[in-house]
Image (tube, rainbow, N blue to C red; front, side, top):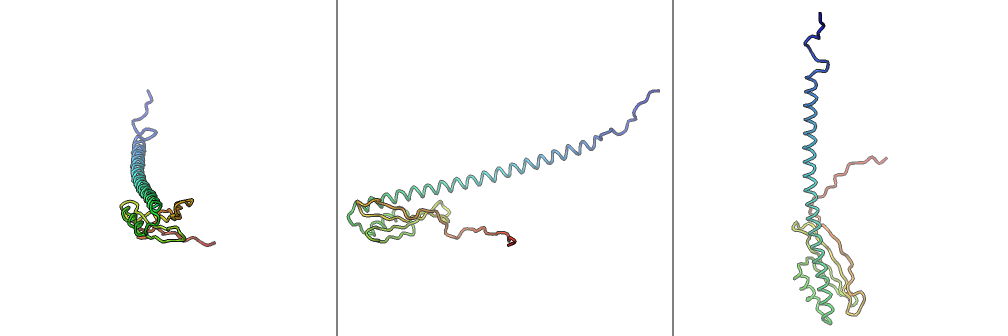
Length: 162
């Protein structure tokens, strides 16, 4: 008489192995979808940052050109009228233009929009000294600002003071 094993259940059930493989495939699929979504969000954020940096440097270059033109106009004429300098700023697309005489020097303030959104701008303040003085142009302020109409994310969590 031969002893055979009865045809029954295998020691490690084939059904439990199928369930494990199915769960493993579902987990890997979920992680791959999350990875793709995260990569797309990172790409969009990188594109927005690159656009902002490009727009900033375009405004910065325009401000440098305006400062150079102002200096040349100031040195080219012995006593140019402030209106001539203001016309130069207006032609260059400067906004919020202000000019004042301060002890022989001209204080010039203007801003240039950064990008198309109109929320951010480059604010510039310069002192133009008379010809022969050193330095001839002295930047006082050169910074990026917002106009305050954008969304403000200040939803901080309350912290226990201790």
